[in-house]
Amino acid sequence: MQWRRPGPTPAQRRRDIGVAVLVLLAGVEFTVLVDSMGAYPFLNPPGLPAQVAWTAALSLPLVVRRRFPLAVMLLVSVLFLAAQWNQAGDSLVSSGVLFLAIFTVGAWERNRLVARWSRIGVIGVMFLWLGFNLVRFLLGPDVPSDKMDGPMDPVLARVLYGLEFNIFFFVFAYVVGEMAWTAARRQAQLEFQADELRRSQEQNVRGAIAAERMRIARDLHDVVAHHVSVMGIQAGAARRVLDSDPVLARDALQTVEKTARTAISELRGLLGVLRADAESDFQAAPGLDDLPELLETARSAGLEVSHGVYGDPREVPSAVAVSAYRVVQEALTNVVKHSGASHVDVRMRFLDSALELEVADDGRGRSTGESGFGLVGMRERVAVHGGTLEAGPRRSSGYLVRASLPTEEIA
Image (cartoon, rainbow, N blue to C red; front, top):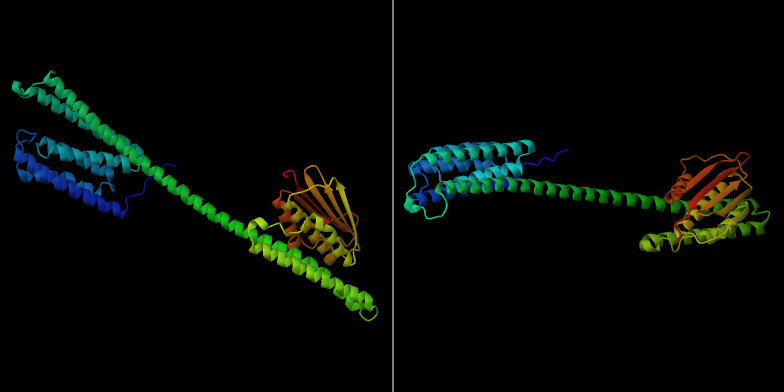
């Protein structure tokens, strides 16, 4: 869509009033000076009051030149020709007013087609008027020979002088107006782009804040849910055998104590990450080397855990390692809390360009709902790396969680 220049601001309107007043004062002064010197360009000029009146009529429309550029140019053009016809109005000031009117149409008229052809039309009329004046000059009285000192024919010199001066005058007014319009459009585009960039940056900041909140929520859920689930199971077991088997109850309570300390340690680490710079985000976070301890925690909750690693183990990006650990942790938490399983199989496969994880149990195989924080958190963690997650009941029995995390960007 074609850009439409906004109307003048109140400050610009005030400046237009000031310009009109200055032009009027300059016109009156020039008229007085020219009349006083006897250097008036016309043979039979009207009296000084009439000349001042024509100067005022030409100057006053400039007050609204930016609000109504086309109307002002047409009015000034008509007044300019009328003043010339009546041999009134100083030619220098009136020509400046006409120049300013043509320039303003080029710089401010919103309809660019109208701006172009109206200026061309006015310039064409002015050249017709120039030709008419040249014909009058040729048919008029001869110029005294003692005033002609140049080597050129006086008629040819008059024609060339009028053409060259007016061509420069009108072309300059046209081109400068176009340049002012182009500069205003570019300025508006820059301001629009700057505003778009500012809005985009604000949206990015809001998105980053929301993503960080989601990450914190996932980490808190993974840390708290897993360890609290194990603590609950161990505390329940200790309560049931407290009288009959104090030794077993003591072992269960020791597991509760150890799990609580681990949870507190991970929470402190998470809080430390939040207080530290972003560079330390994954330095204290758990990774693949911490999986055996996680599996031991699941065993202490009464699960039989089997663990297999396939492929050639290798270093993976720290962010991928954290996500892999959290996926396994959340899957084991769901097994402990919801499945009623007695056995869980955890497998980790190092493929050519991905790390694949599987957590399968022999429990009831019922989904806890796609809207649960655990599954949602796992999907979000995997999606961050462009991976995939499958979660659902197995054909025979139990539940399966399979995650694939790309690792091809590892250096």
